[in-house]
Image (cartoon, rainbow, N blue to C red; front, side, top):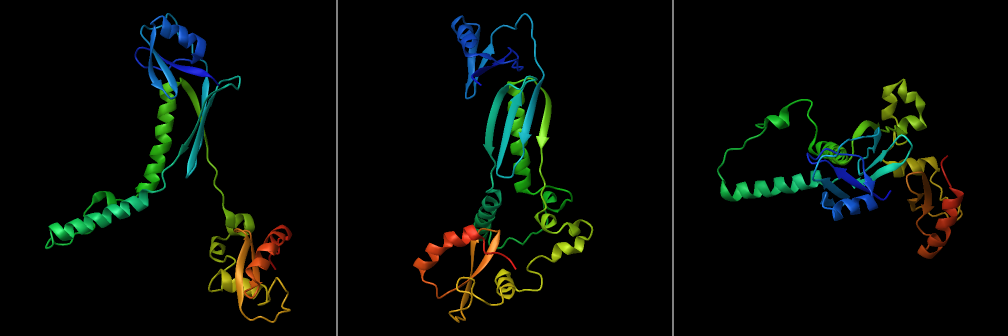
Length: 251
């Protein structure tokens, strides 16, 4: 995918060229470099004829990372990118609010309190700042690709998964079942695991008669294994891998 992106004198995107052709255009003074990453040149004079091929832009949306790729009708990839999406908007806004409250307390101590006096905060149907930042990141990448290549079509890959419905498909017919997960009727996950395993250590199967038990998770978010707390750290680390492979699981 060693190509050089080409722009017309009015910055309209043209079909990319090879590195050799771009080198000749620059050496003959017919083009200039406008961007180094990705390497893009701009023609000084409009070409005699322009021919563009149908190019498809594919966007793999994501909450943390989004991917973009452009391919022609033959399947040749002309552009690839991976963009990290910001996830610190909420924390930054909390810090900004704390600094603003501190400043107002110092500068305008007797200012009357004001709440809900911002139209953007009380209007219905608005996006949160975090969601708006993620949407803007996707739109910004799409506009950047469109400024480099003559895109004719676009494909967005959106995947929505319902983990609860994967475990219990009946929730699609009865929405109230969403509130009856594995912890329904228990104080927390630890209480559920203790009741599930009958308050018995899964390491020694109750032979030690130890009453103090602790819940561990050898397989993250998949299986919950109940272990007695009297197991030494060395013994636990030696047997942790075996328990993960055997997947001492659910009742």
